[in-house]
Image 1 (cartoon, rainbow over the protein chains, first blue to last red):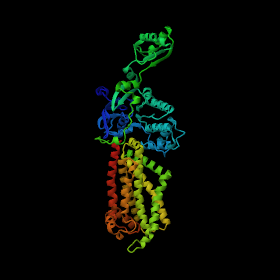
Image 2 (cartoon, chains in turn yellow, green):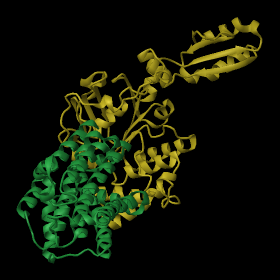
Image 3 (spheres, chains in turn brown, red):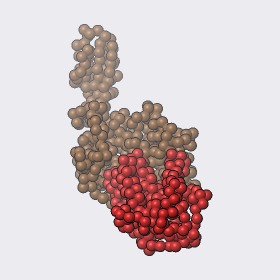
Image 4 (cartoon, rainbow over the protein chains, first blue to last red):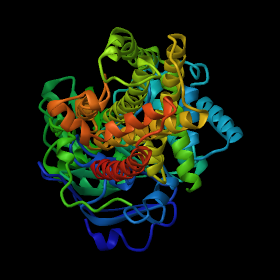
Length: 345
Length: 257
């Protein structure tokens, strides 16, 4: 992607801006290989990629937990290397593995987190209670976290990340391993944070649906490079139009079906029992296709609309499917041995 | 000292102390360990005080009390190092690194917790020693001197163990924290005064800094202070050196993410 275009200007005091960010590890390739990105204030930015693509390493650098080997980034208007403490006071983060103490209760975690941020006693109690209620943990607040389910731990981790009312929130694969109900609840809360509280959200995920549902804009990362960036709609539109596939009840009508479909776009491959076309008018043409087939008296067994997905975008940009691209080896502690990294602030 | 530093230190200390006092698996060994040593040494080996040349009128119980006090101070610091390593291994350390605007407060917090834990242990140890008939000939000021030395030993050991824990960031670093402390404690005049040691152990104990700390402590409890200057010089220089060591460890942990 073009660094000049993507990093023009500043992302303001509540945004994120990275230029040529690199992180190199001793025993592996560059985990992050010179990425440029820009997240506007109040935006939900989805950072999508398979395991080992460099998502978490990017988050670690942007949250000042890992110094970059090269490049610069500003978070909330502060340089991540030179102004680490100011970055940290402006951000909240829920990292990939919820770091919770099994011996503490939910309330005690809130007390700890709010104390770390220097909130006074009254404010600590008010904020802790409010956040536990918001994430639906009031009833479990006095139970030790060791007995929480995965979803409860994630929700508590989110509440902890919000303890000091951060302007920017980093969520590293927040729904990995959660059931659909917990995932949906977390999506709703993240969307509410951005919409109502104006929090900028940087969300990494390997779930296409999550990026599609939540993110205002998506950056797709692969092998440490951003290979595509834009709104989900833009990215999907970039790689092509939707395909409609019709299978007639009577196999002898296959050619007739194909002829009718041909009125609506160019023929497409992949329809062994029927016919398929790339809809020149987009999704809106589907109703007309149905009407045309009906008026020709063709009885249809199945009619399917294939809209391009973010996986198609990933496939188009990398030649691989996102769902099959997961690399067996995640970044390990060994790989994190630093090579010529700058000293953190 | 900034408000940020104080907030971080207080929060980190609160959690460590809370877990220590509410978790029997942490509390009981921390109390049993020094009591076991005290009972073994002061009780089982009390006849040692009858050997010719053993000159400690305050009694063998007080003689061993000082050693167990210093030993528990040192091992309290090592156990705190285990906690730091566990926190960084489990990822909890990242929570601290993320929240702390002044990350030196993290080490200070663990240090405060180590000291508070040591106070609990010392209270129990002292109570048991007094019940066992320990004699104290030193004045209250002498006792302040003895406990100040124990505090400095605790701080030194905590800073040493923190430096290792932050570099290794795994509980597997435990032996590395423990072994040097164990060795340095036991190549000192543990059972008898330095003058009764002979051979290589005498040579090593003569240059072992723990010897000065033990002799000063025993001097305080018997009301005949000795080698105070050297003991306090060590008690000030060693924490400074190990503060630099632990700060280096913190930088390594920061760089490793």
